[in-house]
Image (cartoon, rainbow, N blue to C red):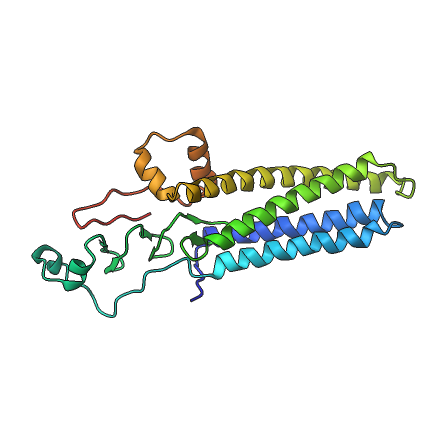
Amino acid sequence: MSMFVRDPCGLMCIFLTYIAVFYADYVVVRWVIMQTMQDSLWAPFHVVLFNTVIFLVSFSHLRAMCSDPGAVPLPQSRMDFSDIHSGSDTTLIQHEDWTVCTRCETYRPPRAHHCRICKRCIRRMDHHCPWINNCVGERNQKYFIQFLVCVGILSFYAIILVITSWVKACPTCSSEITVRQSRIVHCIILVMESSLFGIFVLAILYDQIEAILNDETTIEQLQAAKGSMSIHKIIMSQICRLPCYSGSLSHRSTLNTHSV
């Protein structure tokens, strides 16, 4: 089942993501490759390879954005919460480790959390990421990790191309001052953009790999920390979620519910 969340913050982040990606493609092709490698066989090679990486970035991003992260099916009818206290509900007896979500009005399996942005309970929910406008959960975490890896490769590749174009002598480069100034400005912006995105995705990728190795989602780590988090966790929780997503977790109520 595909999902698309109509969240203004997420849609804005998607727009900024693709603007950054296509701007990097424009600078690399127009101001790096075509300006410094126009008479070399390396030019078509780098154009094809760089755009292949961009295709992989876009494909993995779309998969992470549109894939079902593991949403718990909604019930056909409203739940009667009096069954919980009376103990007469057979579903809850059969699944003693399941919890109840009062917002979705349904039972949910262990390690599932309610996302107030997606308005659904997500299995093994790690966090809601505005950069993919979707939750990172049981079914789409692999696509999210692929997206992070591809963005890291793209950022590193762009920086290497810019550095190589300035270090290596270029007798065929235009000597016009306006062309040189435009190239310098675009290259500086690209290096800054690639560095920021590269550091950002590497930090999140480290966070994801650590969570997988420890078999613990980000939400579970935040709940276990009880307010005492490392600087790394605090920075990631703020940057990845942005001011429009608080990331605050509510404690379980008497009905054993929690949401994000």
